[in-house]
Length: 148
Length: 207
Image (cartoon, rainbow over all chains, first blue to last red; front, side):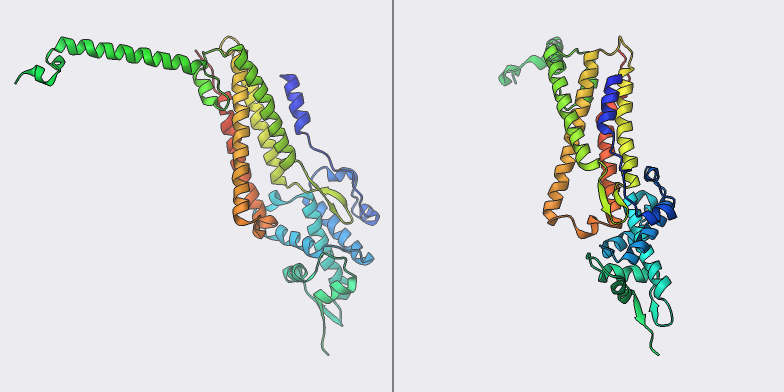
């Protein structure tokens, strides 16, 4: 019996994906260690995602914006709440929020007027593709020049 | 009118009728006993209910061997299904490395599946020694595993047929809110199948 239980435990045990590579800046900023990936803390994962999104925007290495923002929309709309979320989905939702925050922080000034919230998310889902996008391309999707 | 004209005068004699009834019922009882005897010696592979029903009949050595082999086969099938569908899949998130993409609901149901099977096995192993023989336990366990594997494969084939009918997974259920609700529904069906497969392991054996 004991050996059977051991066998079952071996067969059903999962891989652990704690071996990850986070951007260095975010690892320091959010105090995110490898061990933080073991447990699922929604708030931590969202803020890590936001930091990663802002960093990627600065470097201009952002990919798959529409997919990432679809996850954010799912996170907002899901009737199951946290039950329907995975770690990867939560980080992706955070990335979308980070992108929109970054645009609003840096470009929402006298020249431009930028979208916020669900309107911005929907605009990114429909218009942004899967390819790498520069800062200016995303800014043009979200912001309009004010008329004078 | 003569009673013999009908070729049958048994009904006229009460004692004769009684004798006929007794004879009929005796042969019927003999037939039934024969039937039960044959049923108790039958080899069962997907039928935990009847294994429980005929718990006093001891399976032969050959039957126990077949039980053992089929149990291993169906256990392997279950492990294959598990690895194929329920193992955590990692996806690449740019800027954060590879992260597990299994949802919380997924993990909870995995835990529930293992709990149901473990509970059944533990209860079966703790049945009173002189009430349940080892061969009964083996037969019950093998039947439960076979039944569960068969039902899960049936569910899989039904889902496959649905997929073919609709020409691939509909876009609504591929990703997003409705995908999670669809997952929840399938998990609920799976846990009912597993519970039903192993429910006769919980039953008390008393003679």
